[in-house]
Image 1 (tube, helix red, strand yellow):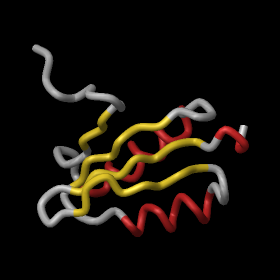
Image 2: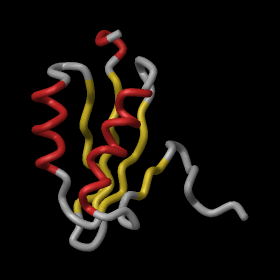
Image 3: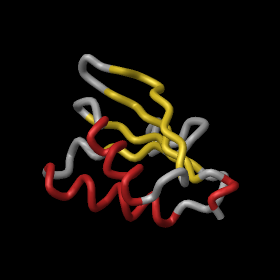
Amino acid sequence: MAHAAKAEKNEVDVRSLVPMQRHQKIFELVGELAPGASFILVNDHDPKPLYYQLEAEHPGQFSWTYVEQGPVVWRVEIGRLAKAA
């Protein structure tokens, strides 16, 4: 059952999680990223508050690039910077 979950980057769709579980899951994934690795976060709203939280807790250690910006789906590529190792 090859769903489009893995195109060129690993996509993590958190829309099925209850909101209070989303940040915990995303922080786990960010913590597991090897330097230079990334994943695409798929969400049902702009996750900009998550960006601020990540930047506050892990300043200068990750990249944040919008791939799709709504209005129904947001995709953000989150990566661990190689220099942050």
